[in-house]
Length: 228
Image 1 (tube, rainbow, N blue to C red):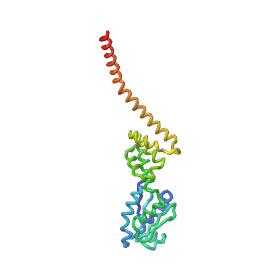
Image 2 (spheres, rainbow, N blue to C red):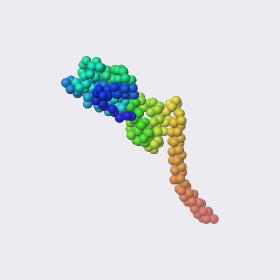
Image 3 (tube, rainbow, N blue to C red):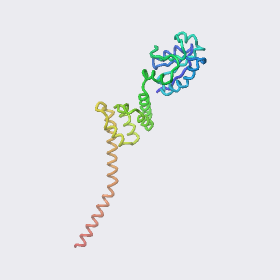
Image 4 (cartoon, rainbow, N blue to C red):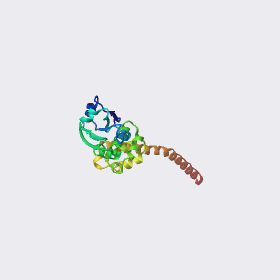
């Protein structure tokens, strides 16, 4: 994921910021120091932007300092929040709003928290941070964890951290349509582990078998000599 982007909107950058909505949505918050409600929500908006980790950018427009831009957007009340996608406004809120209302609006246009966490988990696994990836994957909702691609990602991380029994249990639940070459490679890795474990057990018992055979041979010889 990309780092969160938070900018102060002005005449020098507002066109560039709007063009940026062609690649990621831009949430513009129209505020002013004289509007207490519009200023109070800014820390919550910043925190929300950080939480979404690059899924959208936050642009703060001080309407007292940037009256020309505010006039171009036709802002009539503060606070006003507008969401831009592909250079066009797609949603918005007018008047004082709780942060929950902003979250509900964003949920209609942005990836869900599960999707964001799943993406982050995949990035972590690609970086070899399997334990962190497992933690994120296990934090997903029960419904989201039933997705075939999520199960495959979890199984891979479990295999990489030598949690073979748990990985096998996950692989046994993979839907048929997800049993592709990647799935087969995970099964192959699991089978290699089983073969190695069997070989290790055999090598562990082999000396004991030899000792048992030697003891039995000595006993037979002793019995033979006695009876003779």
